[in-house]
Amino acid sequence: QITLKESGPTLVKPTQTLTLTCSFSGFSLDTSGVGVAWIRLPPGKALEFLTLVYWDDDKRYNPSLRSRLTITKDPSRNQVVLAMTNVDPLDTATYYCARLLITGGKRLDHWGQGTLVTVSS
Amino acid sequence: DIQMTQSPSTLSASVGDRVTITCRASQSVSGWLAWFQQKPGTAPKLLIYRASALETGVPSRFSGSGYGTDFTLTISGLQPDDSATYYCQQYNSFTFGQGTKLEI
Image 1 (tube, each protein chain N blue to C red):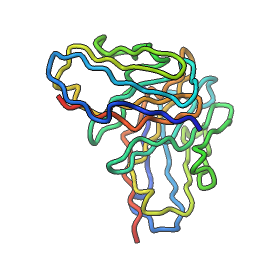
Image 2: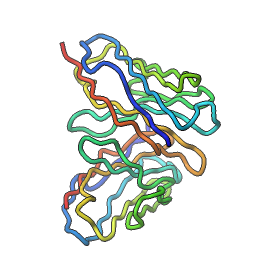
Image 3: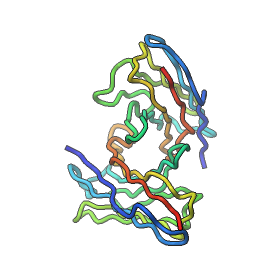
Image 4: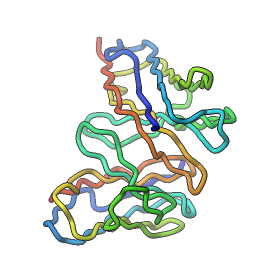
């Protein structure tokens, strides 16, 4: 059974760095053709892709957020960490992590339940 | 960056109807497109990948088609449980469409 779960602070002050952890089970990030992505859903808005790390440590970033994002993986602990610097109230959103599978066609096939992060002073 | 434009933004239909949602890419994404269903307070659920492949466990009344820049999601025999927001996502640079809210 594949599961993912996001964890981290629920409230962050403007200008601080937000750090979120995705803990997963049922698959390995050492396996070829696998990746983990971060996506967010701001209230009243659409899903937004943030970043992705592949099994071989190749990474992809949303160009509009590239300078503020860092994604790292720790396959031994089955975790992927997202760091977002200099947060703003506009970063208030539900943050999801999801597994990317490439074999047979790229897709985000399993998602975490999401974690709501509020940016406010 | 590749932009994805969905239409319509909102859609109202009745039980048993057939509806189509379209997604247009600003440049070709080949067949690398997926469709998701999201209900309030829950994570998105994968429906279709590689433009037309049905994800395991998804009812066959959901279908997808298209290639290059133009794609469609069709839902046949609408059920009340299909009320949700639907998103397309391309897998060249992973951007999502702006969503289509379907009301039954």
